[in-house]
Length: 232
Image (cartoon, rainbow, N blue to C red; front, side, top):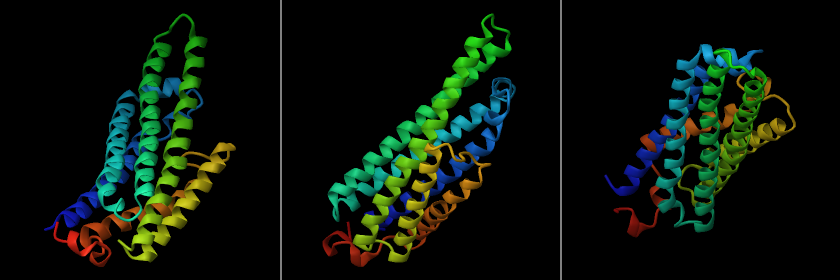
């Protein structure tokens, strides 16, 4: 098994791990932050919050690792965009991790609030700020930078023909749609799993899973890899 075949399998597995971990994190987080008095809700579901944070961190690490693994191959086709892809995934996951840390901070604040702190309004204000931090981190990181990163990746894949073009076109369309989703969020139009606009994330989510399975089963198009590199 050559290096590029191994890379394809590893990248495919990482995409699946990142997606599954992100979904599980969202499931455990559930509607905790959407409760009217979310500080009480967060405190009452502390273990769920911690489990969600663990899954979100796994998702962030796995997602960035995909760009790290793909870079040596992508740079042989369009180096500037390959570097851009790594940078976009880095920014995406920095925001992702910042939002995740915000969840842990919110858990601490909620525990202080429920414990009957003297200045409850202070903790309510702090909780509001942390909730905004988490929401904007998700919006900017996992929608805007994620969408731009996906568009960059699929453009390089389209130009290089490393995967079937129908699959990279699907990715380009899905990335454009998720950018629309993020833009709607900037104007306060429906964020979160319960939002009707959440369906806009489905095309790119499905494309990434098909892409992942394709890499694991088929790998990269050998004819798109330089002949002198195919055996490396």
